[in-house]
Image (cartoon, rainbow, N blue to C red; front, side):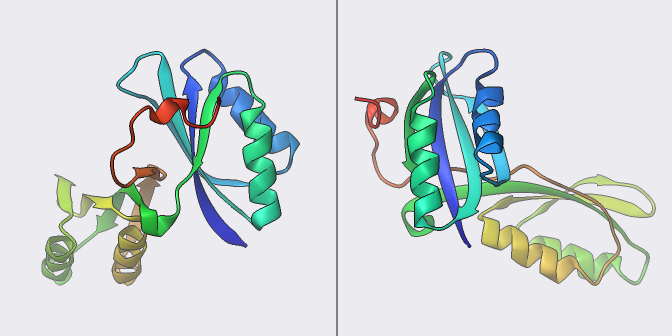
Length: 169
C-alpha cells in the first residue's frame, strides 16, 4: 500500500472534522495521520490526512470527500512536489554516560532540548517525516520514555493563488 498525503480545504464550521472522519470510517479508509487548523482566513480550515491505498482507493477518497458540503477542495500532495513537515517531542532517559552522545545527536539533527531534569530530557524536532523517522532510528538504542508526534502538515511548492477555489468549481 502506498502512503498519500491529502490536503482538504473546508469551511471552518463546527463538526467538520467529525464529518470528514466519519466519511473515512464509513468507507473503511484508513487515516494514519490527521491534522486540522484554521488558515489565514478564519472562515477556512485545512485538514491534512495521511492515508494508505492504491490508485482506486485514492480516487474514491477524493470523490467521496468532495461530496461533503463543507469541502472547498481536495489536493493530493506528492512528496517530491510538496512541502511536508511534522513535529516530534521525545522524552528520553539519560545518565552521565549517555548525555553527551544524546546531545551530539540533538545537535546533528538540529533538534532542541526543551525540558531537562536530572534523569530525563524532552527533545523537540521539526522537519520532513523522513527526518523524524531517521532521528527516531538513531535514538532507538537509548531509553525512550515517551513520544508525541503532531502528524504531517503540508502544502504544494510554488505559488498557489486562490488555493481554496481550485477543486470545487
